[in-house]
Structures are given as C-alpha cells and as structure tokens.
Image (cartoon, rainbow, N blue to C red; front, side, top):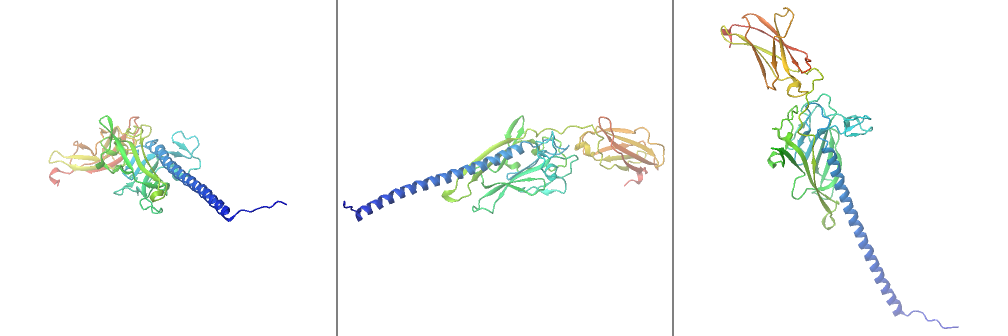
Length: 378
C-alpha cells in the first residue's frame, strides 16, 4: 500500500493567502460593479425625473389660451417661482373636439373653469388672487406650476415642483429639485416691436388683474409669448454621493397675443345702471345721462355696437315709440348724453339698451329726472 503524505502547514498557509487575495479581488470588483450600477441607476432616475417634468410642462403650458371663454385671459400670473395659465386642457366628454385631451375618468372639478371666490396663486409674491371675475361658458381650467421648498427631504436646499388645477389640492410632480445656479425657475419672453425678446427682470411678477382680457398689447402680461424653465434635479443624496443634472427649456405659447373674437350670436349683456342728472343754468337747463360700459363692451363678447336711448314724459305717458337717440359704442370708460330739449318742471323717463351687429338688443335699464330751474342748481 502506497504511502500518502498530506499538506504541510506552510502549504496550507500559502493556499489560504492566495484564496484570500482572490476573494478580496473578486469582492472589490463586485463592489465596484455595485457602485457603478447604483451610480447609473441614480443618474437614470435623475434623467427620468427631469424629462418627465419637462414633458409635462411643455405639453400644458403650450396649450395656454386654448378654447377660452370670452374675455378670459390666457396667462394669469407670471413670476419667477410660479406660472398660471388658462386652457381647456382636459374634457371628460367623449368626442369633445375642443379640449386638448379627453379623459372619461376626469372629475368635474378637473374639466371646468375656475370660478369665484378668488384664491391666492401659490408662490405668488405679493399674493395675487384669482379669478377676478366669473366667465360665462368657462370650460378652461386654470393650471398652475410652481416650485416650493421641500422640507421632507434630507437636503435643506431641496425644492419640489407642484401642479395645481383650479382650487383643487396641488400634486407633486417631482422632488429633489435644486435651483439653477444662474437663472430663476421661470423666465419669460415677450413680443416687442415685431421681435421676441427676454422680459426685463423689473417686470416680475406679472399678473392679469383686469376683470376682462381685451388683448391689449400695452399690458405686459398680454405680451408674453414663451416661458423658459430652469432647474436642477438631484438623486436625493448629499455630499460625494449626490448626482445632479441641469435642465433648461423654452415653451412657446402660440395662442397668446390674440384678441378675443367679437361675437354677435346672442343679445349683448348690459349689466350696468343708467344715471340721470338735471344740470345747466337759467334758460339752458338739460338732463345728463351717464353710464359705464356694458358687460359686453370692454369685455365679454365685445359685441356692443351702440347704445339706444328712449324718452318719454311721465311714468304713464305715451308708449316709448321709436328710439330717441343712438350713441356709438367707442370703448369709452364713461358714456354721456346731454338732453337739452327739456322743459323746467317736467319729469322725463329714459330707457337705454345695448345693441350688437345683428342687431339684437339687451334688456333695457331705466332712469328718470325732473328738470329744475338752473338758479336752483347747487
């Protein structure tokens, strides 16, 4: 029987050292691969977050001004941390041809317009309340994107991008957002003298405080044609483990800067009062009629062509008959008609209605006044 000799202690120690070196090398390579995978995963996550937010804002901000109610502004608020627009973005009615998207499961609150009472636009500074008026036939939602500090993350410098529709609870779009090192979150471009230029910093913030949108290009917010968005997205870590990507993109708004159409399909809305005042002097007495613009003159359907006035003496006098005067609508802030064909001591009754191009008339509003001698005037 042959003699078998085992391993010596030295041979075992050499084998153990070799095995340890091989294992250490393998573990090092595995750790390196794991770190590389984690780094690649972090960077992919950063890119996905960055791209998702950009795609969403590009789709929705670009729709500003789509299918608005008459006199509803396309851009509501434009600041460095928030932008608010009006657009008929989503409908829950199958076959709706006017909304950008159709979602049968969308709630009524997501597919209708923003109505009073007004509430502050998030991150507006100073606080800006919207809406300033209700808009008849409003199906366009108010969509607000804003950046705010995020106290739920480990990095105290973090922001989060929020999206809010009308007065509904806001939703988080992405977290782990950092400011761009050189630019604010939102910047804007406006049309001036036939060219597009960046908005001066002293214009911020811009808001649409008028009750009606007229397309007046002397109003700064009406000049906006594009929004530039700037932000940095991180992987949510700090120190050497942090990975960041910067994002800058421009969203055009092709539906802004367009004057609201004139609509003569329905009778104009008057919605104002007529005032009669006895004025003048001895032998030159008169009654002055004054009234502000009708609802559909400056705003609304903007279809008022003229104001029609009727006159008669006494509350139970003869029928009103033919119109007494017609006053052209000239987009005036106050309209006045002076009736000097009057007699001292007589009471005159007036009716006034707005007329459009069809020519349909609004319901009339009335006023009365007794002519007194001029010497009695204050």
